[in-house]
Image (cartoon, rainbow, N blue to C red; front, side, top):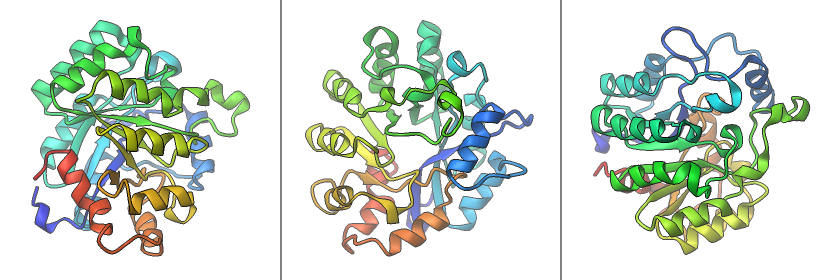
Length: 290
């Protein structure tokens, strides 16, 4: 990966379909997400090689991951190994993260270590609302965090409302309470050397996310899932000041493209000296790419 040639590092993209055509979300949840993000009616999802070509054309790198929530949804994820193998095939643009359902227990902990040691994954994505767990559940999740901290990887947590299940009766059974970023505060306190990303503007808990990120040195915030024109003013203020070294560009591709995100980011009141930090420099440091 030639960092000098990269215009940006997108720390939040999704592998939505496997090489065998298997989708990572049930059709009703996928359709609801498409409506929420105004991308309904997609006839096909980009494959991993197509994603690599898309980011290569834009001279960007991308953190890519699946979401393993099989215990809650009954739908198996795109295999972590497939994501990691795609990153190995496209090392100029892909940075592999994995996802382990916390309900996999000790088998999940062993899998996490194997993915780091044998496949070179750099981090792990958690989606508490879809996976149905509180991040500070010691019995359920702390074994995974121990491996992630020990290996120097990143733990990325979805926070705030989710478009998955939005509009489906009962929200598709998905509960928003799990994704309050305050549940990650305990994790940051109990694992002081764990590198953490709170994903998305954390509506309706934006102030909680800012509090955790300013208080805990290892906690960062990515700006994915929202067009910058909708960012809460306090998020913009903190990104420009106290958190200028801890805020990261993320799109949520493919439901939100980096093209749209960056176009709106150009019009956001971000200081000139802070823009390169958000777009590339902060991620370079956090991911150990320098």
